[in-house]
Every structure is written in C-alpha cells, then in structure tokens.
View (spheres, one colour):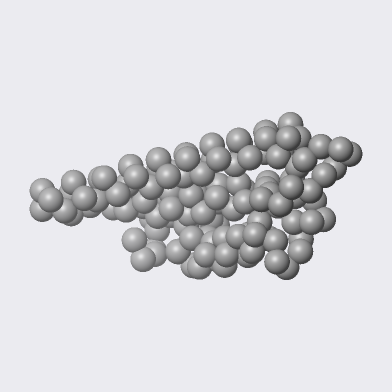
Amino acid sequence: MKHQRNVFGSKIPELQNIQMRASESSAEIDAAQLVADYHIAGLQGAAISGLSSDRASLLKLQRDYAYISQICQSAVARLVDASGAGGLNKDSAVNLNQAYMKGASAHLTMGWDANCVPYGKFLLGIEHQGLI
C-alpha cells in the first residue's frame, strides 16, 4: 500500500476499510508472535533447567505452530483482499508476501489438518500413533 493510488478521490491508506483490515491483520500477527514467544520461553526454560518436555507440551507446541501459520495466512489474505485487483499484480508486495506465506504454510510441519489432530486426540484420551 506504499503507492498512493486514488480511489474515488481518496488515497488508499485514507480509506477506513483499509485501516480496519490493516489493524485486524496487525492484531493477528501480534497474537501469533505472543503464542510463539510463549513456547520459546518454555523451551528455553526447560533447556536451562535440564528438563525435557512432556508429550502434552510437545503436542500443544505442534498444534500451536500450525495455528500460528493459519492466523498469519488469514492476516495476509485479508490484506490481499483489501488491495483489490491491484493486489493481484505479480509485482505487488502484498501478493508476493501471500505467496511466501502460502509456501511456508504448505510445509508438513505447518499444516493445520495434520498438526491439530494429535492434540485433539490427546485431549480426548485417544492413542495417537504419530511422530510425537
């Protein structure tokens, strides 16, 4: 949104709907960062004290990192949608960032479907035959 295009006489950043979408996406990204920081602090604390993580903590970590991927994808997609047709241009920063986000989220360790099930099984007392 760096370029100052005009829409009906208003610059893009001056439009209230753009401001709302930018604010909501920013909140999602901040929430994702808080979840990541929580787990990093827990892992660092365990490493310093020489403790290993229990299965429940590892399953929750697996789930939460996949969730971080989900909410970051949502934040970027919202900005792409707000950009309209101009955001679809191959040189658009918002379009390029969406491609990067989709690429990172496509990794096996970041996919929601594969990574939320083990923790759900754990919560419901069902045995999981997976990596963690």
